[in-house]
Image 1 (cartoon, rainbow, N blue to C red):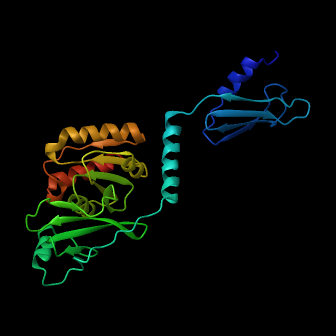
Image 2 (cartoon, one colour):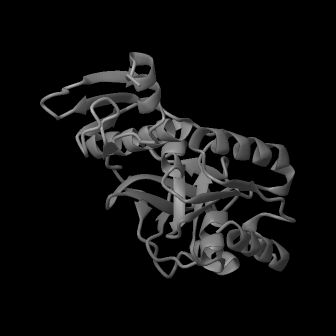
Image 3 (spheres, one colour):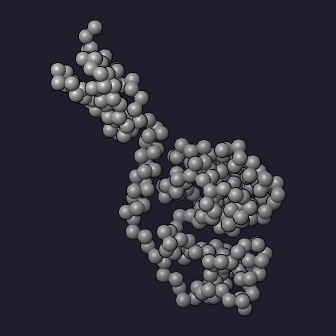
Length: 269
């Protein structure tokens, strides 16, 4: 039976080729062995037969799957990040390396059982300062008030959308910087992310898209926001995303909460 244009289009559409992939096989028109190639150029299937007696060629617009679109967005985000000029934070003179006589700073570290390596002290406002790095440069910092000064958490430049702690492929989204640090201490194979703001944006999604799975564990009184974040992340990134209801903030190291997060990490693998 003669291969019509419609049948040829259906044949090409039926080939399961991912974006950027190539197919090579028998030509459906001349039956030439391994002479027919199809290349998926972002949803445009370009086909061609290399047999001299045939030389059939053309293109079929099929479009990208949702997963392919998500992958392209992630890839584009990473490429933009490479081209992006990294801003460097100019550290104020009153933000210094801590010394032993700074008792409020030492007391804060002891209270929360966190390591002071890499942290700084804001002499002017009495804050424990958590620097935020990008490719080895400090681009932002967030300071926690030690003597009741408002606001409790202070952003120094606003350049960084989030604070990260840990190095696992599972991302745990928490409420604040202390929860991120302590969760990373208590739970192996997890990266904790504290969103420095009240809502998710495109920049957050670019970072989130680099991980294999996501757990959202905000404060217990923010359950509605926890569920909202889970939906937004799953829709935007396509990643497996789980909302967790805890008894308290992770920084309080409640045994039940830590075990709940650990179990969710194991089940989501």
